Length: 258
Image (cartoon, rainbow, N blue to C red; front, top):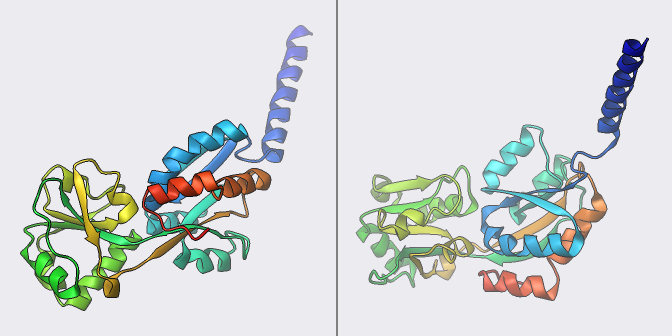
């Protein structure tokens, strides 16, 4: 009798656990955020502040925008997305986020970097940049299939007419800060968004791309339609727009219009 009683209790407990798993949101204990890598320097500093102020725990996964878009297409979604403005219409059209909810956080341009201590080359004009890139022994930038800066810089090389000349000496980056080999002296020159150059110890920003070749990318935050807690997602969005957060975004290399 006791055996059957305990078996029934175990069965009931298991059934309750299954029922709760169907009712409770997937990220009840916190928010899962997928963010473009360009926002990482600011968000790494701001995430602990948000957790302390709100009581919510953040799990932040960083990747190039192209990688995040492929993950979304595979059917998985986080609670919150931070993506470049040029894909906002696509994520809205595909029903991954509610229309009209993307909120800009800040904008950033693409820059050129070399190892700290090396002679600074001239990148002030398209012609100067062309000569500098041809003179460089080795070059790295993000894989155009994965990241915003890489896609743009590949088009810059085409505009300058030197894509074929630099291909053999180019190493395409995959994830994270592609400037790290430059900082170690393994590659002479690198190209990435400025917010991803400034945090790399041992690398120095030479300057932004010339204005006529520049791409300014705005990054926006948005909750997905599958967000476990829309109120918490909204709280994070508002937190990242406070004057204190804005000051950190600017310090990390962003241009913020608020």
